[in-house]
Length: 100
Image 1: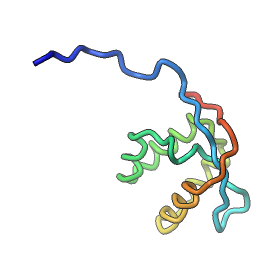
Image 2: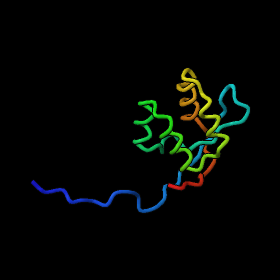
Image 3: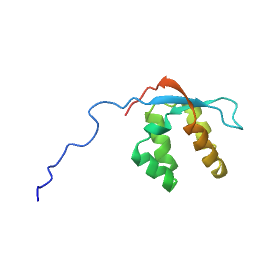
């Protein structure tokens, strides 16, 4: 059986995320977030576990502005599913300013 070689982890370049824009009831301004389809597996796992700080950290590193992050933190538990549905149906608006 072949022995697995150690690999140097991490991306060789910064990830650029495509952003989508969508409205969500109860908020004055539309949200602009990275495309739901480009969400890293680790962030999907964090969503399933309810690890909000990891999700917010990813959104921040993807270039989401502070006021949008603050609005995201304001969501109630009952709003999360409809919000993620609206996010998944968002309209493309271009690339964000990724830092990770």
